[in-house]
Length: 218
Length: 287
Ligand SMILES: Nc1ncnc2c1ncn2[C@@H]1O[C@H](COP(=O)(O)OP(=O)(O)OP(=O)(O)O)[C@@H](O)[C@H]1O
Ligand SMILES: [Mg+2]
Image (cartoon, rainbow over all chains, first blue to last red; front, side, top):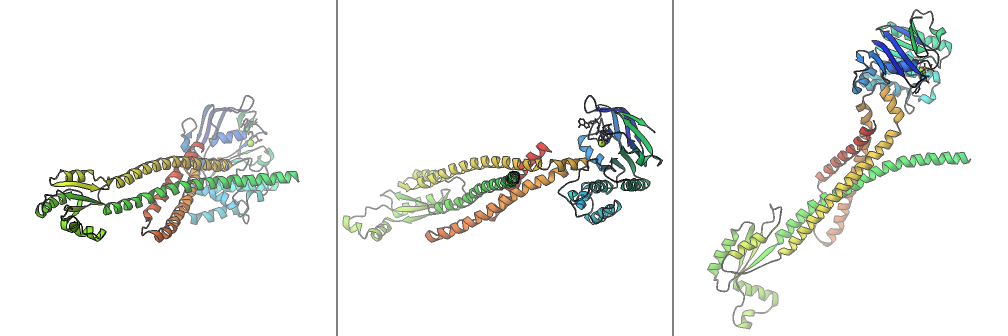
């Protein structure tokens, strides 16, 4: 589903990722850990093709970073559920509308829409808050709103960039369990985190990135 | 307190900035359509006005003195056969005496001891089916008939009206063209501002897989709504103006300015096209 072949990308001279190889298959659950500034978000952006490698090839669901046409990028992103580190919620819309937006983009019957949005809000524990605007939600709630928006379109892959960053340890643990449940239903999960304690010993693949170097298996 | 005043002022400025741009684009559509709409109404009505003038138009033909009634009537038939002639009425020299008597209350035959008036004919011309109104060919054909002395006509007036009308039409079309272009620019910059105000939203939409079309459409529609709104205001105003104008005109003459409802459809169509071009320009440059 996702593969990196000798991928390098640098924002500037000091920061970037170098010669990264990576493989994530259907139904995988993989963690990416590394300290702040190590390049986790950069890898995520390479996957959803917000960035393109300077050398090497990123392949996602059959789209190759060196060949993909600009107008195909939206199609690529529709099959990926992204939980952004900085949420990217629309501030002038309610939680419901933010989540529903993902379905409008995919294009779905309005009859089905409401049920699916309410179901997913229940799943992430935000039921009852659907009429609130993002600034009326706590940081952790906004993060879960972002997860709900990623889940609602039932994507093949979930990319979660630091989805527990604003959660207390119990809520973070709940979220990991939720992702595991989604994974068991067949969705691949790729999650970046700097909280090793949260993810260790759960039997998932762990990749580590340090100063731009990616190491598989820990 | 100073800070609060500053912030309130900033907020007001923002509101005003946006209101003003929407106001500007709606107003410019409104003005454009007022001009184009007046043009349509003018064309509709000047056609009927000129048609009216043509129907009232007549050529007077005087026959040579030596022509008797019989010859005159033959000439009359020749005139009737000229293309562009609707009908011709014969006025014998005796009729002419009677008409003179009616008008001047003098019997010229008695005064002079002989009849000085020639027999004549009044020729009416066809008022429809001609784009260019020109009496010259008809006059020339009439003059070519032997037995005709003089031909009198007031062709200059209608020709002058028509020439003026043509110039007026050309000027109007140029003005309309220029103002359409200006309106397109105004709408395009209005939409550009609203796009800039929503760059965060656009970025997010792109990140979660929205196609460009999905992102662009609301902005295109927004521009179209400005156009539609301007068009509705303009047609409403035009209909109102024609209505009240007719009330005043009817007090003086029995002419009615005619507002054709196809004008409304044209104006709405034009506004939609103009505003879509404007917003498309903005959208395709930025998004
Ligand atoms: N747009 C950018 N321009 C320049 N440098 C950047 C840019 N984005 C990231 N960087 C740099 O690239 C490096 C990797 O950044 P990245 O965001 O991938 O880190 P991260 O692992 O996600 O960190 P965190 O855990 O804090 O989210 C950092 O040193 C960062 O300063
Ligand atoms: Mg990051």
